[in-house]
Image (cartoon, rainbow, N blue to C red; front, side):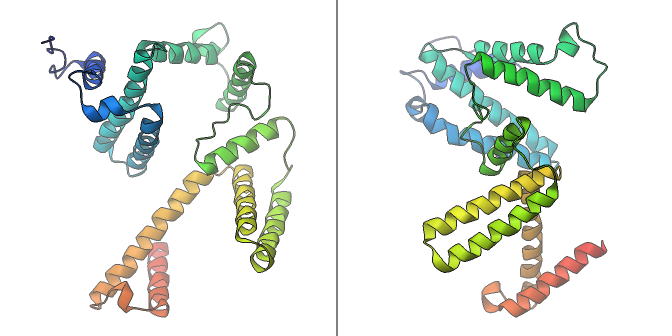
Length: 272
């Protein structure tokens, strides 16, 4: 039996977590489920954990955040262990690559550049450095390196920002608003005359332009939609609570009654 003192050390820190991951993937004594996984099968869990971190932050649940950050860290450990088994890289390589990247991207902190610059200027410098990194990876296209697996709203913004850096952008929100009106009209036309696939395409075009409007207004579309989801949840739960007080469920109500309760919930929120 191998010495598992580290695995059971409550203060073992990062080495303990790495040892646990190795044990889980041990082909002879590990967990069958963990052994069967590969990069593709684990990737959806990685995305899910990142969203759960964001959710804990949004709810300001700091105790839960600690656990969610641990879950997200474990995803990195899992991927690194699988890579190590294939002879690709290990967790130390991941950490060292990140450290090297941070040093290169912060010459005003770790190098000989002055740190007397605004956050806005640092953002500009950051983009210049990242562009140089992409050039070093033979990513010559403006849109190269924008991950396909990003949430669609976030990827839309990143694509638009990249295009804007080379001048492909509307100069003001007025033109973006005009484009929204145009795309909305095309969607109505598609709904009335075209196939479902064409309706979906026009709907996507409208969403894409809405993200562009958000970018011009300094709004994160993903954040705004999450807030809208939370608001809808609050107000619909208010409807359910009001109906329950009347001895009813939503199924026993109708749109007129629920719409009135929605307006009441909306008014109550505004009066707070």
